Image (cartoon, rainbow, N blue to C red):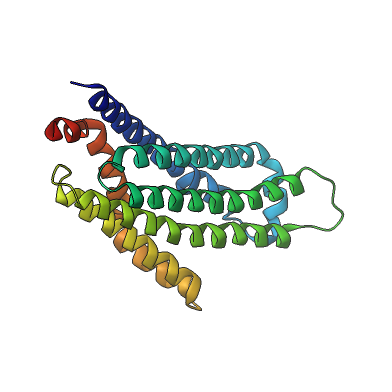
Amino acid sequence: MNNTTISLNTLGKIIGITLIIMAIISGIAFGGLHPQLFQTDTANLFSHLQTTSNLLRLDIFLWLMVIVTDIIVSWALHLYLRHINPDLSLVAAWTRLIYTSILATAVSELIKILNLTQIHIIADPSAQIQLLEQNFNLVWSFGLIIFGLHLILIGYIARQTQHIPKIISYLVILAGLSYCLVHSLDLILPQGHFVASSIETILLLPMTVGELGFGLWLLVKGARLERNKA
């Protein structure tokens, strides 16, 4: 066992643990907390957010944690995969960082909403808040297309080595294609949101299993990559 092996073992654990943490955080934020905050009719949205401002702060904090974990995964995946294809692994890392910056831009819309709930306003800003939340979804949806491209690159790189199971690389590529398809439809078609929601229901499993499955494999067996090379 050499230092490189230890390094890959550590990187695999970092990626796996960070992806699990990210999945939990994003599940709480977008799967539960965010809809709870914004699935309210426009007429009562402002008063609802004022009374739940602490939950809105928690929602924003969770999204910021997702951004931090994305940065960590970008760095760690590049270090782990660069011995397979250094150029493409760097491109993949930058692609994810671009997605992360887009997500940060989307989260800034939520911060604007929080600021609106903290000041005394004569006119009810519920319509403005709804528009800001729509901007959050649109910007994030565009970012998820970039994220899909990142996953396609990661899957392609993983496919170039015999030590990562082919099923893992194909699942990651499928997840990337699913993200690109769903969120492209969401942005391009006039009724794209409803079409994308229907397709997303079908593709939810590969979208979830792709990257998370790769992370779990790295956490459990990723150290074998260097041992098999040695």
